[in-house]
Amino acid sequence: MGRKSYLLGVVAAVALAWAGSTAVGEAVGAQGDRASGRQSPVDVRVADVVPADLPRLRFEYPASVNVQMHYVRDDDGEPDGCLVRGEEETVRAIVPAGAARLVVGDETYELQQVHWHTPAEHRVNGHRYPLEEHFVHKSASGKQLVVGVLVANEHAHNDQVGRLFAAMPHECRPDRGVGNVHLRQLLPRDLAVSYRYDGSLTTYPYTEGVSWIMLRQPLAVGHQQIDQFARTFPRGNAREVRPLGDRTVLTERPPR
Image 1 (cartoon, rainbow, N blue to C red):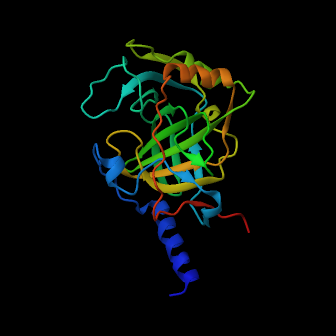
Image 2: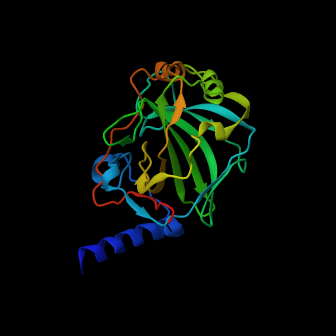
Image 3: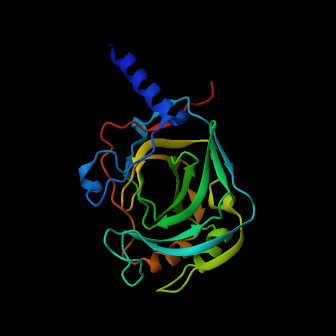
């Protein structure tokens, strides 16, 4: 088999997974970050990204959703708490069941929650952004899909980000509700180009079989808002990149 035929076969196999054949992931456990080669996050090397015929994305995010800002600690053997902040901790915007969804080809994923990591977990050509958003979805069959959005430090105040960060629970305080959140304003304008690969959750239990869609365009946010989240997690709450190994990162093929 020639090299060209082999590469075409690899691309076809990976693209098929994005058409809906990816198996439901399993928890890896406390050693998952060292024991497996299909972990997240990764450093996306743009020169190595392979164009493919991928299913289109349709974000069905309404203009007004009520969310609950919830502190969470995902750490093996550690109780929920907010006295020690670190990699396994973040603040989630919990989305009501059925309120928003993402359609990928003919597969529908319900949006469950949005959370943030500082600094960004994924990198692009080695560059690390100051913040990253994760939109966590699940299909009716249990498949997990995360949309990642890198956040750029620019002179652009984002009203929705500001409202959510102002409602972050501090110390050990209870959840706080935020009404009429426009979820689409948490996304960049260009939703047509992405980097897609198979990986894992970036917190315990590091579940694999997670489909990742990293939007290529960053979200522009003011530095005051980025600093506001960073002050909540002064040591950061981001996992370091993991080796890509033999995985292939795909992107949408340009229109012919």
